[in-house]
Length: 139
Image (cartoon, rainbow, N blue to C red; front, side, top):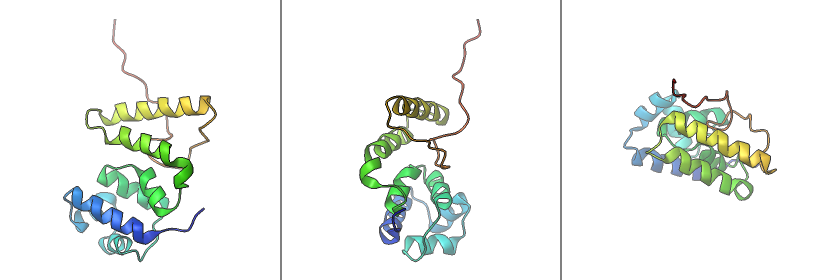
């Protein structure tokens, strides 16, 4: 695992929070972390866990994988295309959350089939989890 680049991560989080028009307190409440802890992350004084990054990403409605790369948890060069693809899917406002999860699962299955996907049961959102059934039309 690479060392965390928390300064760059903190600046990025602050920018994303401001873009979402959230106060530090609002984001901390939405992410389930303390206000002082989130402030320390933004100022580059704390190294958040992947779980905390996942919670913050969910609250900001951004890709957790992007935060993992910013924090140095994922290898940016190796994972950039995959992360960008996931980020675009997760950011698409024309898809609902269920559709995004199904699309990510299909994407991951094709990557695995083509020898690019690894076992991704790392707790990152939208990567693994129980299968999502497509809606069926009653006949």
